[in-house]
Image (cartoon, rainbow, N blue to C red; front, side, top):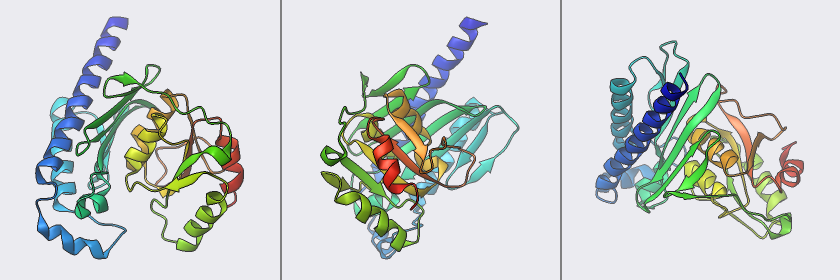
Length: 267
């Protein structure tokens, strides 16, 4: 039984790696080549391109062929519930606005949940060729090299990522920026939650704050950060729940978590 379980996990890890990279290659083939995407630039929230849909269909088809009884939850299609203990969570193009603008900071995000436990998560940014993968209890990796969150202990020395996720209340977003920005070294926004979480895991920044974020945007990132030694909670300190439609979340190197939480918990 033990060897059967191990073999299954290895097979799933190989599958999710190939799936995520193949999806990224599809996006890359069309990147900066479709001039019609310019018209989408008038909107920041809720942009969907034909490439989001194209890759979403590709991923669903591949998962269904390999694991026909598994559940799937994607940004473009929603929930495909087959009553399985396994659920695949997918964002076929995380950072659609970046993609439409020709910005290379976009990614494919795929995670596998067994029961309520994150098991495997991947983030792939094809335009910069960065692949991240984490497996529960096995650590987090960037292009085959093990990664760890940063060791910064003081908030005033920290770099943070800020993203309003699905938040439409700009006054609230502005309040979060205002309350945090003057207490840190600098704040950035990448435009892809997949990359923002992956870069926290890789120690490229020290904390990430996002509001009303959807599960498909952060599912692999939650596992990446935790497996890299970091911490992820809601603003009030509760654990992330993938079944919630949206969440206010803090990702951190753990050392700064309480300091960040104390600033945003009531916002």
